Image (tube, rainbow, N blue to C red; front, side, top):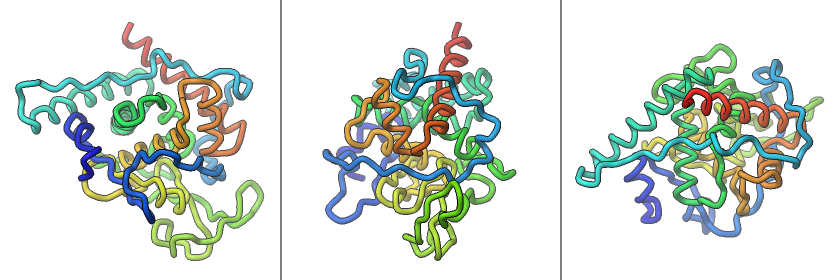
Length: 277
């Protein structure tokens, strides 16, 4: 494990391990380039979602209610005991928030872990679980697209793979970049996993969010942390209107897409706040 990652592993029980390319190696390296806009690859989960009536760049989703609770460790406990109590704290938050929002608790746990990881390592970004949940809903219905179910290990019951990016109406043309390793397509790239990453972007930002020693785009803990890193690229502040819209538009360069994520994130945060009275 890289030394800079030990604090978050000890407090959250997760590992953020970059599959670095070239001279990389520190996952929050300064000066990271802003990712290019991604295409819409899985439209079906978002078809019934109404875009929020908000002007791009005018506001960010509710922030005051969009922060998962800090897990608390017993100072006198061993490192293992501290990790267990942290996991229990986030599990309880996820179960409570699931009842209020309708988002599966297993997905919420991943979104909450990702927020806490970025709060630890890139606090100026301020990306929230609610924004990640909005993306997860639009992209794959929280890992349930196409009739699959999200299992307790964080993987869908079958791989989630988007349409071929072959230049047909509504999608960009992206020829194969991974030899079909992630998406099974040797002609064109396809977005993969519950957060729908194109393979080249996944390889650049991939992180291990569940501590099993590898980064898997189909595993929702890994995918959520990777999505958070992607949104935070270039030193963005996701709590402000400018940063939030820039981050979401980098994920998918579509105003309607961003408005859908906005409405979902704002709604999730409000529902979670209401459930706490």
